[in-house]
Length: 259
Ligand code: NI
Image (cartoon, rainbow, N blue to C red):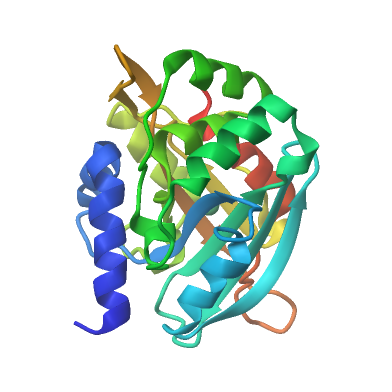
């Protein structure tokens, strides 16, 4: 196993530890699943922003592929592509903290100052190294679901995405969605079950996030963890499969971790 395979397998183990449905669904396909992309969330603070994450991933052959802006959610994002196209793309997003209240900023500055980034792998696998309080979680969620998710889960994969193009038993995203619903999974239907179209060159769908009991200071509470995503890409006019992302679709996919 090379260094990148090892890193990706650690990401999958961590992700499925709090997203057990993804492990089960990956087995329902009955074939080896190839990932389209893996997504992460962070803040635009100098020690843990997407530029720092990108620096770490460059050692594995990842390069900048495109950038995105989510106006309502106040996020900036980039995607990276590997020099070897069999490896998943990486989608990195960061919350623009200065656009939020002083209360939110001070909570986030406090938790991320405790965070050890000497080993940059921690930006992807470090999880949470601070104590959490349920009232603070609810308060953050009022302003930004994204901030509240990071407060509870820390630095870890937000979702993996199955490449429908690589599946042998399924060719349409619609067929994958039907199989998921037949097996009792709930899809994110914000903006329709399928986000994007052939015209956008990218169709995406996702499950709603699992709910996991989390130990807050004095109490156990169920909160959304992560979801599993599915993507089908189409060729552009040059005949190459589109490799970018569609911001208006991703905007809706982000809501898969809503309560
Ligand atoms: Ni995604």
